[in-house]
Length: 127
Image (tube, helix red, strand yellow):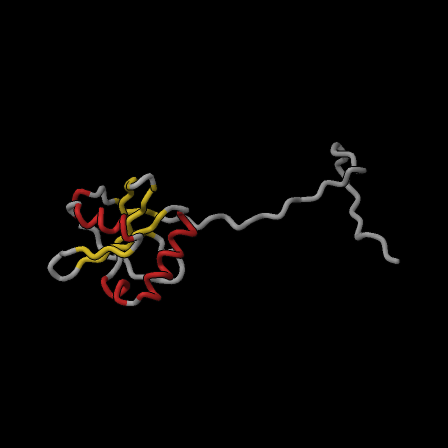
């Protein structure tokens, strides 16, 4: 059985989850600690972080001390997941790589020669 991942504002380095397609939507089910679902603001924050990173429907799941799962997400999807055996989902350990920082495009001077090995730089003109 997968370990529970603590909820944090930033994306964790890894987590346990399962992907499934329900009602025409790609769903990522993320295993979290029960205390995450006990705080609606924490649950929303975690869902938002995963949705921003994975661009799909996110459902959080936590298990109580008896192993009974509780799902947090869109109602129809949470109900459908609740009818499935917990172990029927294909649980995996996902490694999350941070996306590369966005790079600004390098402007090309239309008057420069691309074959020039000694380009001249200009700071612009002053009035």
